[in-house]
Length: 212
Figure 1: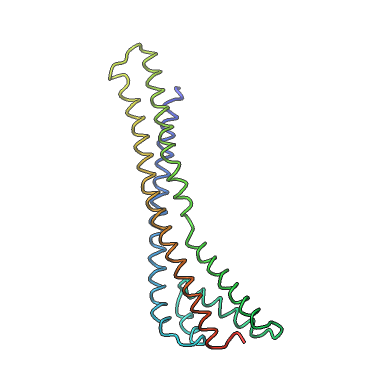
Figure 2 (figure 1 turned 30 degrees about the vertical axis):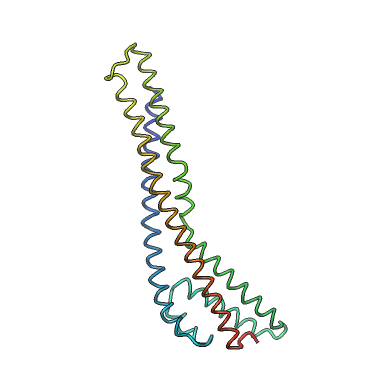
């Protein structure tokens, strides 16, 4: 059995799998961001009405957003430092700030899932397709050498298969790169929103005198 066509077929199958993976990640991430934004908007509508830190537990309990989990981490840290009479005021503030930063990192990591895969596929798929193209051309040259003929009927099949590999490689990479850039932009906005929430939480904490 000729090994060359089998390698080209393997490249095509691999690109097909990668393409399915790309679109699966895009759909799952889009749904995850949709749910996150819906929950976040509901939380923010109530968050804007908060006047003191002690109003937060109620809206936290009614929300499943990343912002609610951030504030919940801050509230838990606040309760812990208030119960510790040894810590000075500045130390209590540092503990609460650290808790907020840790939770913000966890929330960012939660939304990062799959994005790195898109970046990897976007950068490698064209080269995988090019690899298939090279093998297809090599197969065409082998066929010409074996038959002694360079007619269209001899080389059309292998070269056509080679071009298909290139096309599929590009078709797989383009949506992966576009989706990666799109989700990274959403991540930056989400990170900025988290920083604003954490900043206002600290402001409410200071106004309420809750950190002692």
